[in-house]
Length: 241
Image 1 (cartoon, rainbow, N blue to C red):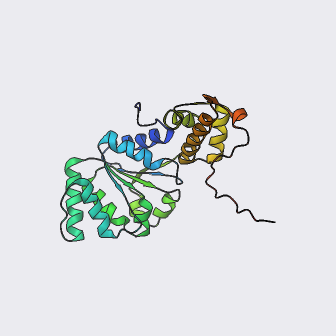
Image 2: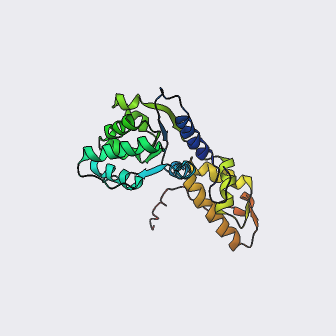
Image 3: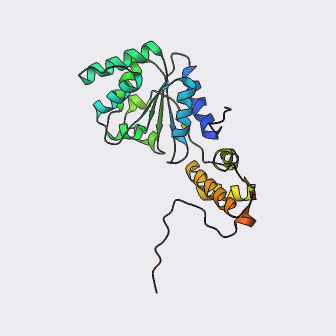
């Protein structure tokens, strides 16, 4: 996964491997795969890469969507004019996916679970047979256990991995291009991130800004000193004595 705009992170590779397995599976095996993990771990970033790589259809669900809104959003992504009823729209989507056999990526799958609309996705999958990648939060596998028929159609469950030092090194090429950040400071950033790619990116940008302000082209823990790094926690209110 080489390129100037996409970082070859661990989770990008995992997400792509999941889709590859679904697309190359024997036809008698289920074709849905789930990629799940905590917020900020780079799941959506990975899914967007896969969508571009495979020319997949990508839909990011919203908490306010109804069952019909979900179908309308998929229709929009597929580029087809929706019919009037939920049944007709679902049939349109199924037929289009059956004809194209392109991967469908559904991000924020937890919203569909909360709306109890998972059977709509199962109906589409059963009718089309096209691979479907589900992106969700850490408890997505547990939530889907309530729908046994849906749960049984999952080919593989792929947990996202926390950001590591190697990922942080790669991210410096995108978020700290003007300075060299040594491994001791990178490791500290990774530890404070608690798995979150997003927090690493914020801190890399912060370190670069501080280093340039100090007139440095290279920075490590020694130069960084006691300066604060972003952990995602709001600062405690100072109470005057």
